[in-house]
Amino acid sequence: MDEAGDDVNENKELFEKKPVWRAVISLAVPTVISQLITVAYNIADTFFIGQVGNPNQVAAVSLCMPLFVLLTGMANLFGIGGSSLISRSLGEKDGERAQKVSTFCIWTAGIVSLIYGVSAFGLKGYILPAVGANGETYEFCSQYVFWAIGMGAVPTVLNGVFAHLVRAQGYSGQASFGMALGGILNMVLDPVFISLMSFEVAGAAIATMVSNLIAAIYFLAFICRKGKAAAITLNPCGYTWKMGIPFEVLFVGLPSCMMNLMGVCSNITLNRLMVSYCNEAVAGMGIAKKVDMLAFAIAAGMSQGVLPLIGYNYSAGNVKRMLSAVKTTFVYSLVIGLLGMGFLITCAGPMVRAFIDDPLTVEYGSRFQRIMCITCPWVSVTMIIITFFQAVGRKIEPLMLSLLRKGGLDIPAMVLMNRWVGINGIAWATPTADVGVMVAAICLFIPFWRRLDVRGKLRIKYEESQ
Image (cartoon, rainbow, N blue to C red; front, top):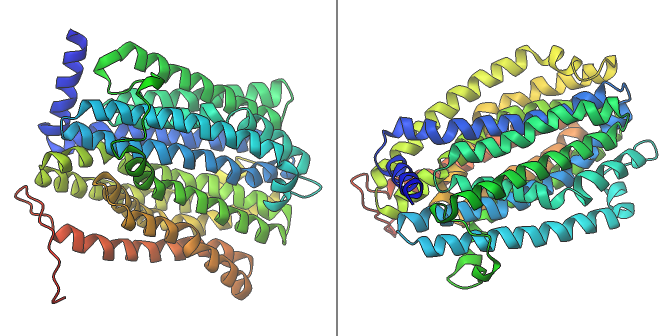
C-alpha cells in the first residue's frame, strides 16, 4: 500500500507540479531512447543480414517490412488510443474507467493480432507477390513472415500496447525499459541466429519474435507487481464495450494506425517502383529508410512521451500547463531534428557501407539517404501536432494529417516524380510530401491553439463572421 501510494503521489506531482521542462524531459527522454533502440534492432536485422553479402536477402527484409509495420499500426491503434483515454480519465479522477480502458485495449489487441498473424502466413502466396517479392526473394520473404509475423504478431503488438498504457500513468522509465529490453535482446540474438546458427533471414525473424516475447513478459510481470497502483488490469471480467470506451480508443488511435497502414501502401508502392530498376536499388532504399527511421523515432518519442502530460492537464483544466508542455516539446524536437538532418547528410556513405559492401547498393543507399533525411525537422513539427490533437481527444484533425502524410501525398508524388525524374524522384517524394503535410498541420493547429485560454479555461467559439 505504501509503495502504491508513493507511486500515485509521484506520478501526480509529475503531471501537476513538476516544472514543465523537467516533466517533458522525464517523459520524453526515456521514450526517445526506447524508440531509438527499437529502430536500432530493426537496423540490426538489416545490418547482420547484409553481412551475409546477398542483396536479395536484404531486399527480402525490405519487402516484408510493410507487413511488419502493420503490427506497429495495431499497437498504436490500441496503445495510443488507450493511452490518451487513460490519461484523460486519470485527469478527471476516474480510475475505474481507466482500468476498463486498459482491459479493452489489451484483450482486443491480442485477438486482432493473432488473427492477423495467422492470416498473413496462410495467405503468403497472394500477399508476397503483391508486395514485390519475385523468384529471387520469395523464399527469403516466406521465412521472415513465418517467424516475425506468423509466430511473432501477438507478442510484438502486446509489447507496444503495454508500453503505451504503462507510460500513460507516468511510468515512462519502466515503459521505455521494456521497449529497450526487447530491442537490446534483438541486437544480441541477431548475430547468434543469423551468423552462428546460419539461419540468415529466418534467424533475424526468430530474434525479433523471441525478443518481443520476452519484453511482453516483462510488462506482464510489472503490471502484476504494481497491482492496484497501476490503472491496468488483465482480468477479462473487466472487458466492456460500454462507457464509450471502444469509440474513444479506436478513433483517437486510428490516426496513428492509419499512418502505419498507409505507410504499408506507401512502402509497397515504393518497392514495386524500385523493383523495376534492380534489387540493388531495393536494398539501397531499404537501408536508407532504416537509417532515416532514426529521425522519425526521435520525433515519435518526443511526442508520444508527452502525450500523457498533455491529456492529463487538458482534462484537469490546466490548459496553461498543457500549452507550455507543447511549446517546450516543439523547441526540443525542432533543434534535435535539425542536428539529426546534418548528421545523416554528412555520414550517409559510411553508414550505408556499414550494412553491406556492395558498391552499387552503397551508391543507391547513400544517395537516397541524403535526399530523405532533409525531412527530419519537418516530421518533428507534424508529429507534435498530431499527438497534441490525439492527447486532447480530437479525432478528425489527426486522421486527416495521418492520411496525408502516408498515402495522400507521398504515393502520388512517388508515381509522378518517378515518371518525371526517374529513380531519384522516388526518393524526393518523401521530403516533398512531408513539407506539404507540415504546412497542413500548422494550418489546422493555429486556429485550435487560439481558442485555448492560457488562463486555464477552454473557450471554443465558432466565429461565423470568419
